[in-house]
Image 1: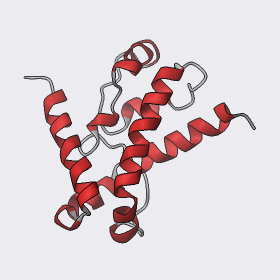
Image 2: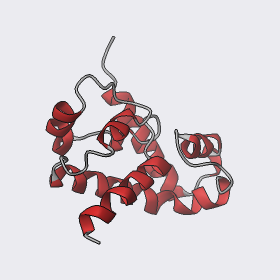
Image 3: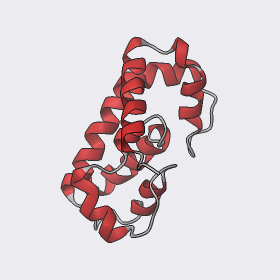
Image 4: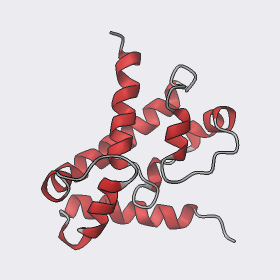
Length: 132
């Protein structure tokens, strides 16, 4: 099995676990992914995993730079919050932001490493929201 065929399911699995818009806006497409999103997901509004959902199944069309960007960000989040997910959210069904909702609910009890990335992501989410 090629690394390409095993990479995307792992990425989407990690994203499903951790990459919801409120808590982890930093996993929304960054500069390395802007062209891919514009080309492959025109009109898809970011948030609630819609971009990841759009890109799922199109991995053969996504640039390596975009894949690498997502992988690095998701790995950092996973490393920081893995213990918290296991401790507070083990029984939570993964997907549709449920694990992140669980982490948010347990915010005051999160480990320092998870709190730090959580706070950074919330700040990034606020900064990324367009002014109305």
